[in-house]
Image 1: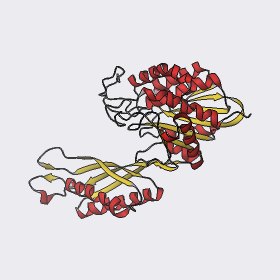
Image 2: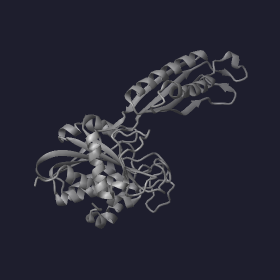
Image 3: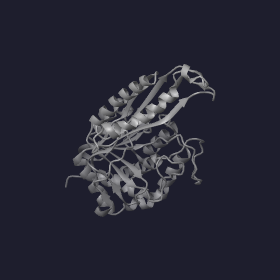
Image 4: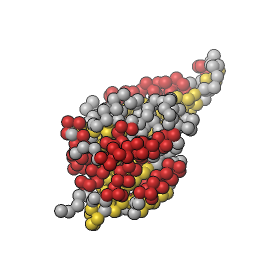
Length: 389
């Protein structure tokens, strides 16, 4: 099934919505302007219900078709990233140090486009719940919305999400059953040593030397503890210590992230990280303490729904352009919380082979994806909630 003609007509209008959001990025839960714009448009489209303030700044729109079919949820994320934009586009961010470097402006615009169409046509039995979520980028906005009653209040039976994917052409989709995206955890290692004069290191317990040894040692966790057939990442990403070149500092702080694709591997890495930090610290005469925080679980697609979204994608772009066995990514995604609560699936949509990587200062969502993404959402609804003949 080709692109829905209505979206070819609406493409420029939806792109204008997207570029407005791009110019006015907001971080985390501070998506007040974005949420207000979304809610206003949903009301203009004639949604049967528009709810705000769910998960602090989340917005939900409800469109009811005919009949008493099930309820499906479609989710888009709204937040930006703390990055200084370098694209030079006419719609470059107006807010220094903030930009839509992950395409959430495009996700929001495409779901709004689908909402406009679905509210006009209502060619389905059942109910569509349009979920506009804040704080995907590390804030756990999906869980906040769930905790605020999202799935129970709106009686959501199944949930679906979509993310743009640079490096793949517009008109391609990627999905797989089971684990598609990794759990995303973060850690802090606090090191307490004994500071002193840099010319007399023997009278100190140097937290920098100890921290350096810890950085090296934790790399052995994946290589020597995790089954080679499994996937895991341990990355130390910051190291803060010292104030002057002639002082051995008293303390050092390291932070980093752990990514895994299986719950048992997640448990193993956390346990081994704690042991390595404590024991290497002791070997260097310092106290090293691990503070470990589990953020996002593994995103696990439900098998039946994965088959379903692959079929929908194939209707839009053709079977040859749908990779149904995509390689899992070690990136994290808090839509995983929704898939722990309800059956559903998450899919990637190619946004262009020459588009910069996600979370890059030169990234910009490719508006050519808009008709494809909107068509995907509407065909998903009209198929999942097909009218009885």
